[in-house]
Length: 288
Image 1 (cartoon, helix red, strand yellow):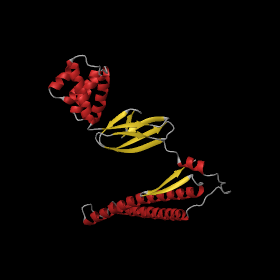
Image 2 (image 1 turned 90 degrees about the vertical axis):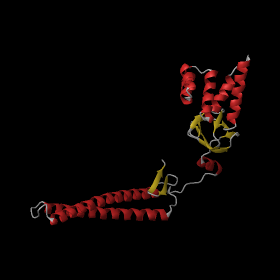
Image 3 (image 1 turned 60 degrees about the vertical axis):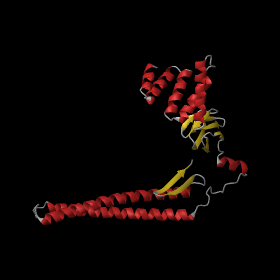
Image 4 (image 1 turned 120 degrees about the vertical axis):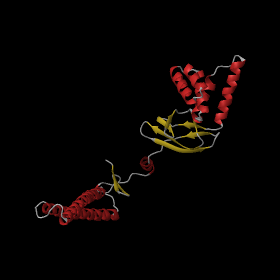
């Protein structure tokens, strides 16, 4: 406390606040939480100041003399002032909730949460993996109640509404022929391109080996222009070999993956396989 007072006299507000945070961790008294609220208010940490000053006012005993009465009135005035600069959310979460997050910060359900004016994301996650989500826009001085409820899975709601259907005898459902044709054609094209690039890489490697052999067969002086020209040609051939090899390998892998994805799309029953196109290829989702 002495170090906190010294820091405050030097106008080192952040340092004084750190000392009071340590004091509150050791002994969470009303005086400590009130001091934290005062320093956070001076540091313009309005959400923290509103929460701390709220606890301060709740925990302060009734004044018994003029000094305590003035301090009591000052704390209430500070809380009223800061609450006009922030907004308040009251989150009601559904049963079986494991965590409640406001802008990624975990909070307690049923308690008020002070936030800055603007749009905020409120999320609740259940013990079974359920998710409830809401976007709330508030202005300074607002007080908003946010009620969350877990979403019902689409598959469950559809089953409850629709009568059972007899599956086809073959167990297969109709497939989009455009996806099958595009997948097969793309796989064949990529595999063909990969084979061609690997053949070109092999040819470039043979050319590189031949030119390197010429460099050291004793027919040219290292200082001659002819030696320099053959050296450059060997270096260029080696670069082509590396580029063709990398591109060929990538094409073969991509073509094989696309072929497997197409086969999976055809073989797996409806609802068990899903293919989504992406900028860099395709995403395959399997369920079993």
